[in-house]
Length: 147
Picture 1 (cartoon, rainbow, N blue to C red):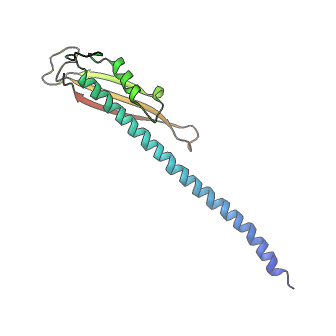
Picture 2: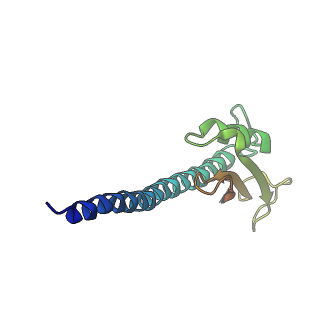
């Protein structure tokens, strides 16, 4: 019997292992990249939703509001936004509220009807595959106070 075909097969076995390792490393990197970008998309959606929830709370709890927690302040808006958060670390959120005059707005400090309120939410997102890099996601919502 000739031993040449046997050596060829043994050498090919090692080659198959190397090819498998390289291919699986690339496949796992792509898979985890897709998962990481999915997490980032979810976090950004949560941040955008938080800004919208905060501005809706502010327009309903304007200066003419008669229930508890009126008028809305930066502190009450932040507390409400943090209480509504799911899926992200609420303690990492930075919630900033500003009021400004709009045409027809006569109430000072701009918390009355027809005044604008802007709620901006920032969240530091860490990608798993970027070895600790942080991306700050920012979203804001601006609405006219209804009360």
